[in-house]
Image (cartoon, rainbow, N blue to C red; front, side, top):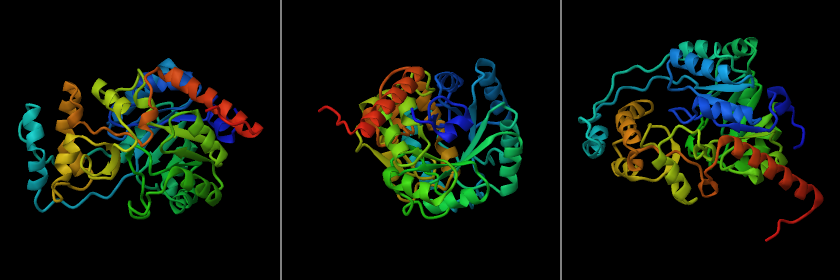
Length: 362
């Protein structure tokens, strides 16, 4: 595969980054497998306590000497308390009853402290710190870099990428609208930032001088090759890794991805209060049926968590947040190691064809 400056800096064999999927999907097993296969594995730590972050990082480091990443959400202002949470609570009543749960209640939990999470992340032995949902102060990024970690931020527009470069990130993930899970938008409206990966990546490449990582709808080596041809120096894949053996999601979630078509995902605020792409299911539809039933992030996320946790325990896909991108039809069941090696081989072949002028056989 063509030499890439970012891959050399990250000390990875293949320009493939496993997306940091918070909430349990990016297990220690998954991260280790990706790293050992020559990619960059990422721990999604946004919903983890400081102690849990340290434990996960130590577990990864005990099993591989290869570089890995830790990821957090950039801190957001606390939302105003809802005037009336009754509609949001009522929208979940049937799901709670079906799952054998007590009626839903709005949690008063203030959430996790970013500073504590960051302190823990810097103690994990990770080589990369990535973040999404916003920017970070330049002094915070300076502290992370002084700790020896490469810093990667997430942008959904070229202007956001420029802003991230301005505070000192080492690389930018350009997240196209095809991407599964939460949108990383922070400097414009979510609607305005729904730019496809093919259009977004070259514009971000032209707008910043730091390396760019393409993300959104990339599932195989053809997608990686396309990203490299557009000027990206690596690709970040999430949905492709969700159906690997090591991914920490319920079997019904994996089946939902493998059975889904590209037109069966949509952007929703139903599960967390923040726009995110997932496969349409019963709970999404029930909540969206009531326009007044969605609280702002992270209140909605906390409100729906008991139902989602119970659904995971009972393997009930109709009540899970089935985060997935628009490339779902390309998902395969295999190990993470097999996936990394397959993508790398496919990308090499695609790039060789492109450079030689060969056409893919029909």
